[in-house]
Image 1 (cartoon, rainbow, N blue to C red):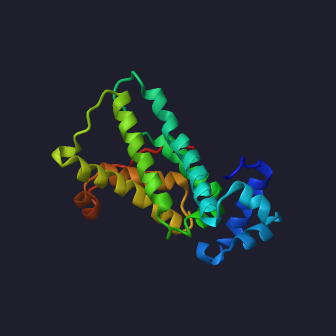
Image 2 (tube, helix red, strand yellow):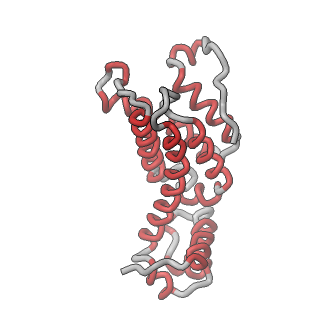
Image 3 (cartoon, rainbow, N blue to C red):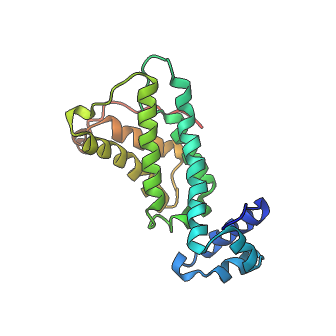
Length: 207
């Protein structure tokens, strides 16, 4: 049974896996590699984790918890208000700022966008954001009359795909630019985007 994790040990292990996964895949990294890089013994590692995969999964879980709290926090302010935008920009922008500031860790945990584990979690968070925002504003989601599962997937995958491409590219653009791209994508039809008939610039909140 894994024990309670010590903050200093956790930081060393996180730094170690970030460095190791910048040059290797998880399958190529051993527990001994992680411990050697972190400067801890194997006993300490196994007091906290079952194996390297358990350790990796818990790093993903920690990152998801931060992103979830950041993205969903603005929804609390919508309760009892008149209808606002269903997917508030503020939380998404703050989450993107966090990702850019911690890019080395995010790149390592996603293997620079090739490991889709975090992608699925982020899409679930955006879905939760949509549901909570609609409920807070008393809005019933209809997805334009499409079957709910297909309509939901179309909305969420479009948003998540832009964020994921940004990570794969190395977070080159600013978080504000990615929010502008996301909101342009969700505000106009494919035909409008393809033919250049987008009517106006999408306003973006500032971080």
